[in-house]
Length: 244
Image (tube, rainbow, N blue to C red):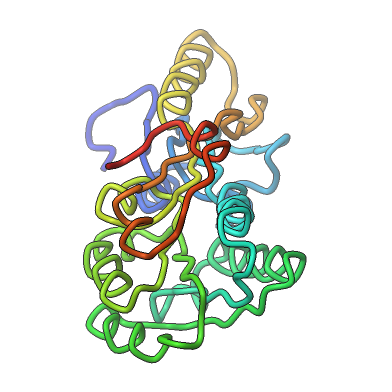
Protein backbone atom coordinates (compact mmCIF):
# COMPACT_ATOMS: atom_id res chain seq x y z
CA UNK A 1 0.00 0.00 0.00
CA UNK A 2 2.86 2.38 0.80
CA UNK A 3 5.12 1.67 -2.17
CA UNK A 4 5.07 5.41 -2.98
CA UNK A 5 6.04 8.05 -0.40
CA UNK A 6 2.97 9.77 1.03
CA UNK A 7 2.55 12.47 3.66
CA UNK A 8 -0.99 11.58 4.69
CA UNK A 9 -3.69 8.97 4.08
CA UNK A 10 -7.42 9.74 3.92
CA UNK A 11 -9.38 6.59 4.73
CA UNK A 12 -13.11 6.51 4.01
CA UNK A 13 -15.29 4.06 6.01
CA UNK A 14 -14.23 1.59 8.68
CA UNK A 15 -12.73 -1.17 6.45
CA UNK A 16 -10.43 1.37 4.76
CA UNK A 17 -9.29 2.75 8.12
CA UNK A 18 -8.48 -0.76 9.33
CA UNK A 19 -6.37 -1.45 6.23
CA UNK A 20 -4.55 1.87 6.49
CA UNK A 21 -3.81 1.44 10.18
CA UNK A 22 -2.48 -2.08 9.59
CA UNK A 23 -0.21 -0.75 6.85
CA UNK A 24 1.51 2.02 8.81
CA UNK A 25 1.97 3.35 12.31
CA UNK A 26 3.82 6.49 11.24
CA UNK A 27 2.02 8.08 8.27
CA UNK A 28 -0.89 10.26 9.52
CA UNK A 29 -4.35 8.81 8.77
CA UNK A 30 -7.47 10.96 8.60
CA UNK A 31 -10.68 8.94 9.09
CA UNK A 32 -13.84 9.90 7.21
CA UNK A 33 -17.24 8.33 7.96
CA UNK A 34 -15.98 5.62 10.28
CA UNK A 35 -18.33 4.02 12.80
CA UNK A 36 -17.58 4.24 16.52
CA UNK A 37 -13.74 4.32 16.41
CA UNK A 38 -13.39 3.46 20.10
CA UNK A 39 -15.69 0.43 19.87
CA UNK A 40 -13.81 -0.69 16.76
CA UNK A 41 -10.48 -0.41 18.57
CA UNK A 42 -9.09 2.19 16.14
CA UNK A 43 -8.37 4.77 18.85
CA UNK A 44 -8.37 4.46 22.66
CA UNK A 45 -10.55 7.55 23.14
CA UNK A 46 -12.06 10.37 21.12
CA UNK A 47 -10.33 13.15 23.07
CA UNK A 48 -6.93 11.44 23.08
CA UNK A 49 -6.66 9.33 19.94
CA UNK A 50 -2.91 8.81 20.27
CA UNK A 51 -0.88 7.24 17.50
CA UNK A 52 -1.23 8.30 13.89
CA UNK A 53 -5.03 8.15 13.42
CA UNK A 54 -7.65 10.87 13.91
CA UNK A 55 -10.56 12.37 11.98
CA UNK A 56 -14.34 12.19 11.86
CA UNK A 57 -16.66 9.53 13.23
CA UNK A 58 -19.94 9.24 11.34
CA UNK A 59 -21.99 9.33 14.54
CA UNK A 60 -24.30 6.52 13.41
CA UNK A 61 -24.18 4.90 16.85
CA UNK A 62 -25.69 8.12 18.25
CA UNK A 63 -28.29 8.60 15.51
CA UNK A 64 -29.76 5.09 15.54
CA UNK A 65 -31.41 5.32 19.00
CA UNK A 66 -32.77 8.76 18.10
CA UNK A 67 -34.35 7.24 14.98
CA UNK A 68 -36.26 4.75 17.12
CA UNK A 69 -37.47 7.57 19.36
CA UNK A 70 -38.72 9.43 16.30
CA UNK A 71 -40.56 6.36 15.06
CA UNK A 72 -42.23 6.04 18.46
CA UNK A 73 -43.35 9.66 18.11
CA UNK A 74 -45.06 8.74 14.84
CA UNK A 75 -46.51 5.42 16.05
CA UNK A 76 -47.02 5.75 19.83
CA UNK A 77 -48.72 2.35 20.06
CA UNK A 78 -45.61 0.53 18.78
CA UNK A 79 -44.50 -1.91 21.48
CA UNK A 80 -42.07 -4.29 19.73
CA UNK A 81 -38.89 -3.64 17.77
CA UNK A 82 -36.85 -6.16 15.78
CA UNK A 83 -33.11 -5.45 15.66
CA UNK A 84 -31.71 -6.83 12.41
CA UNK A 85 -28.06 -7.87 12.07
CA UNK A 86 -26.00 -9.71 9.49
CA UNK A 87 -25.26 -13.11 10.97
CA UNK A 88 -21.58 -12.45 11.80
CA UNK A 89 -21.57 -8.79 12.83
CA UNK A 90 -22.23 -9.10 16.59
CA UNK A 91 -19.43 -11.62 16.99
CA UNK A 92 -16.69 -9.65 15.28
CA UNK A 93 -17.41 -5.93 15.44
CA UNK A 94 -17.44 -3.95 18.67
CA UNK A 95 -19.48 -1.14 17.11
CA UNK A 96 -22.28 -3.56 16.25
CA UNK A 97 -22.38 -4.76 19.83
CA UNK A 98 -22.43 -1.14 21.02
CA UNK A 99 -25.33 -0.41 18.64
CA UNK A 100 -27.22 -3.40 20.00
CA UNK A 101 -26.76 -2.29 23.60
CA UNK A 102 -27.83 1.28 22.84
CA UNK A 103 -30.90 0.15 20.87
CA UNK A 104 -31.96 -2.28 23.58
CA UNK A 105 -31.58 0.46 26.18
CA UNK A 106 -33.63 3.04 24.29
CA UNK A 107 -36.28 0.44 23.42
CA UNK A 108 -36.80 -0.36 27.08
CA UNK A 109 -36.94 3.36 27.87
CA UNK A 110 -39.71 3.66 25.26
CA UNK A 111 -41.48 0.64 26.77
CA UNK A 112 -40.80 -1.43 23.68
CA UNK A 113 -39.69 -5.06 23.69
CA UNK A 114 -36.52 -5.56 21.60
CA UNK A 115 -35.84 -8.85 19.80
CA UNK A 116 -32.60 -9.50 17.92
CA UNK A 117 -32.61 -11.30 14.57
CA UNK A 118 -29.47 -12.51 12.79
CA UNK A 119 -29.60 -13.15 9.07
CA UNK A 120 -27.27 -14.15 6.27
CA UNK A 121 -27.94 -12.11 3.15
CA UNK A 122 -29.72 -15.05 1.48
CA UNK A 123 -32.04 -15.45 4.48
CA UNK A 124 -33.47 -11.94 4.71
CA UNK A 125 -36.91 -12.71 3.30
CA UNK A 126 -37.25 -15.76 5.53
CA UNK A 127 -36.34 -13.67 8.56
CA UNK A 128 -38.98 -11.08 7.69
CA UNK A 129 -41.52 -13.88 7.36
CA UNK A 130 -40.59 -14.97 10.89
CA UNK A 131 -41.04 -11.40 12.14
CA UNK A 132 -44.55 -10.99 10.76
CA UNK A 133 -47.04 -10.49 13.57
CA UNK A 134 -44.21 -10.32 16.10
CA UNK A 135 -42.85 -6.81 15.64
CA UNK A 136 -44.05 -3.28 14.96
CA UNK A 137 -40.85 -2.00 13.37
CA UNK A 138 -37.49 -3.32 12.13
CA UNK A 139 -34.38 -1.33 13.02
CA UNK A 140 -31.43 -2.27 10.79
CA UNK A 141 -27.88 -2.07 12.13
CA UNK A 142 -25.82 0.47 10.11
CA UNK A 143 -23.61 -2.16 8.50
CA UNK A 144 -22.08 -2.12 5.04
CA UNK A 145 -23.44 -5.58 4.25
CA UNK A 146 -26.96 -4.53 5.20
CA UNK A 147 -26.56 -1.38 3.11
CA UNK A 148 -25.62 -3.42 0.04
CA UNK A 149 -28.76 -5.55 0.47
CA UNK A 150 -31.08 -2.72 1.47
CA UNK A 151 -33.45 -3.23 -1.46
CA UNK A 152 -34.15 -6.79 -0.38
CA UNK A 153 -34.64 -5.65 3.21
CA UNK A 154 -36.95 -2.79 2.26
CA UNK A 155 -39.03 -4.81 -0.20
CA UNK A 156 -39.43 -7.61 2.34
CA UNK A 157 -40.67 -5.06 4.87
CA UNK A 158 -43.10 -3.53 2.39
CA UNK A 159 -44.47 -6.95 1.43
CA UNK A 160 -45.16 -7.77 5.08
CA UNK A 161 -46.19 -4.19 5.91
CA UNK A 162 -43.48 -3.94 8.55
CA UNK A 163 -41.88 -0.47 8.85
CA UNK A 164 -38.10 -0.40 8.37
CA UNK A 165 -35.85 2.27 9.86
CA UNK A 166 -32.10 2.69 9.58
CA UNK A 167 -29.65 5.58 10.15
CA UNK A 168 -28.54 5.42 6.52
CA UNK A 169 -30.55 7.60 4.10
CA UNK A 170 -30.05 5.20 1.19
CA UNK A 171 -32.60 2.93 2.88
CA UNK A 172 -35.29 5.63 2.77
CA UNK A 173 -34.58 6.45 -0.86
CA UNK A 174 -35.30 2.77 -1.60
CA UNK A 175 -38.50 2.64 0.47
CA UNK A 176 -37.70 2.47 4.18
CA UNK A 177 -39.90 4.67 6.36
CA UNK A 178 -37.39 6.80 8.22
CA UNK A 179 -33.75 7.57 8.70
CA UNK A 180 -32.07 9.88 11.18
CA UNK A 181 -28.52 10.19 9.97
CA UNK A 182 -25.43 12.35 10.39
CA UNK A 183 -24.93 15.18 7.94
CA UNK A 184 -22.32 13.75 5.56
CA UNK A 185 -21.56 17.13 4.02
CA UNK A 186 -20.47 18.41 7.41
CA UNK A 187 -18.34 15.30 7.97
CA UNK A 188 -16.42 15.72 4.73
CA UNK A 189 -15.94 19.45 5.15
CA UNK A 190 -14.61 18.96 8.67
CA UNK A 191 -12.28 16.20 7.48
CA UNK A 192 -10.57 18.83 5.34
CA UNK A 193 -9.69 20.69 8.54
CA UNK A 194 -7.71 17.66 9.76
CA UNK A 195 -5.86 17.35 6.47
CA UNK A 196 -4.94 21.03 6.53
CA UNK A 197 -3.84 20.96 10.18
CA UNK A 198 -1.67 17.86 9.79
CA UNK A 199 0.01 19.08 6.59
CA UNK A 200 0.84 22.28 8.48
CA UNK A 201 2.58 20.32 11.23
CA UNK A 202 -0.08 19.19 13.74
CA UNK A 203 0.21 15.66 15.13
CA UNK A 204 -2.79 13.32 14.74
CA UNK A 205 -2.40 12.29 18.37
CA UNK A 206 -3.08 15.91 19.41
CA UNK A 207 -6.28 16.29 17.35
CA UNK A 208 -9.39 14.85 19.06
CA UNK A 209 -11.70 12.71 16.96
CA UNK A 210 -14.93 14.59 16.27
CA UNK A 211 -18.51 13.50 15.67
CA UNK A 212 -20.91 15.44 13.43
CA UNK A 213 -22.99 18.06 15.22
CA UNK A 214 -25.74 18.08 12.56
CA UNK A 215 -28.15 15.29 11.67
CA UNK A 216 -30.58 14.74 8.81
CA UNK A 217 -34.15 13.44 9.18
CA UNK A 218 -35.55 11.81 6.05
CA UNK A 219 -39.10 10.44 5.70
CA UNK A 220 -40.66 8.38 2.90
CA UNK A 221 -44.27 9.55 2.50
CA UNK A 222 -45.13 6.92 -0.12
CA UNK A 223 -44.07 4.19 2.28
CA UNK A 224 -46.01 5.78 5.14
CA UNK A 225 -49.14 5.72 2.99
CA UNK A 226 -48.55 2.07 2.02
CA UNK A 227 -48.17 1.14 5.70
CA UNK A 228 -51.21 3.15 6.75
CA UNK A 229 -49.12 5.47 8.94
CA UNK A 230 -50.31 9.06 9.16
CA UNK A 231 -47.52 11.57 9.60
CA UNK A 232 -48.51 14.52 11.84
CA UNK A 233 -48.04 17.86 10.13
CA UNK A 234 -45.84 19.08 12.96
CA UNK A 235 -43.58 16.06 12.45
CA UNK A 236 -43.33 16.65 8.71
CA UNK A 237 -42.12 20.16 9.39
CA UNK A 238 -39.19 18.70 11.35
CA UNK A 239 -38.01 16.64 8.38
CA UNK A 240 -34.99 17.75 6.38
CA UNK A 241 -36.09 15.74 3.33
CA UNK A 242 -39.37 14.14 2.26
CA UNK A 243 -39.40 11.32 -0.29
CA UNK A 244 -42.66 11.15 -2.25
